[in-house]
Length: 213
Image (cartoon, one colour):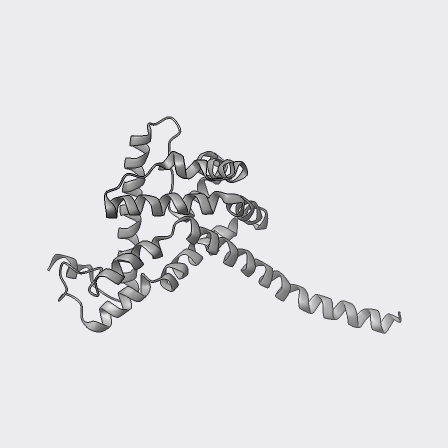
């Protein structure tokens, strides 16, 4: 290989590397975003209520928003809107470095995301139908490595930041009873839904005063 050809190859490589690194970083963010959405499927919860009532989420005061405001808010709470919100949170989390991102992706892909998402939706169905969910039965259907990943995600202090990204925070306490953890879990879900709705209102320039009219 001639010196000139070597120089050209090096120049090409140096020009491509920044773009490659950016693409790889974006790929990590997109993958962890998908897993975070799977673990905390609020878009499915919102979609259920949106399908049932064309005025949701202001069904109790259907006249407080005009058609444009309502469409904007429902769009922000749709699957696409929720993913945008989650991706922004994951993008901030990515600042902790590629190693942390890769470790988080491996953990969630190992079954933590699927198991948590299944439990979340089972809890939602329990609220909707009134039929009690057997969490032990759901967990027993998981493979051992999935259950191990889920428990690591929920209890390992090293994953506290990831839990905050996904929305569960420190709601689970291994030293508490099932009932206490369930109560905390319900509160987390209610708080998360409220924050998402208020965030959507902000992005749609809808004043919070409409909630009190």
